[in-house]
Length: 328
Image 1 (tube, rainbow, N blue to C red):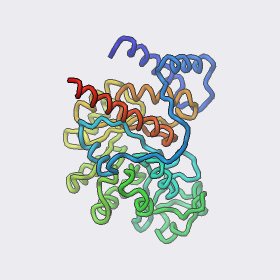
Image 2: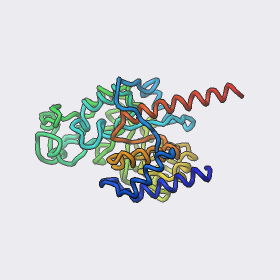
Image 3: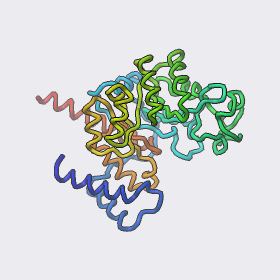
Image 4: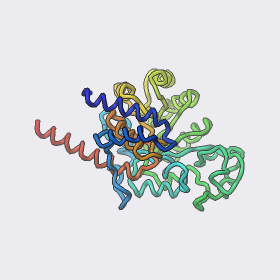
């Protein structure tokens, strides 16, 4: 890393620490520094506005899964948070899945909970109150009851199989399990009726990691993302997975050191842009910082715009690499 790059990283980190989750309007001083860094190149991602449908990842989810499993694959990828973003009318819905596929976005993150009778449904909250026409805890309702409830966009509450019918082969579903009991149910269902190339299991707590490690022994094709925000938590992940890292590490705003450690062990690492994007200049700043650090996946509420930029960036880097190889 050059001295100039190091200075930029330190400046970006200072601004983002001050920003916190960017839930408030930035102060003039912080906004001014962020703008200066943007103009200097720290945050100049320049994603274009929404437009025509975009092509998906070449080769679909089979190629995507191969990339996740291969340390040599350096493509940067984008994850659409809840499909259409936080607090959208279409969050965790079939409509969101259709939007992801139409935009060619590689991943859709979605939240999974189990009904009282063990069926898997998409719902972030523990209760159905905010998102549906019903009331009560999802875990207290049977599948037949949930299937009668309407989302705010007019759809019925989707089961995991409903969203999979839309994304199969086109986009990988990053499953954020809100209850541990859904992990094994989902893995067994995928083994019977789906493909592990179409899914990534996100596990956040040690107890979930232990279950995921056991499931990987049963289903070696299962791809896992384990949460680790610092080096100490990376040790916890290693212990859960028998001394090694799973395919993916999920972090919020990983340091250059954490990114390098994960890559050295042949795994990939994701960053979370959520919250910061509420103030566009902070979102741009964090995006550029994470790209410069070599993060592999970016989870965002603005997936279409970011993927249109990242896809072109991947193509440019691949062309430059091919040109360099031909020139040697």
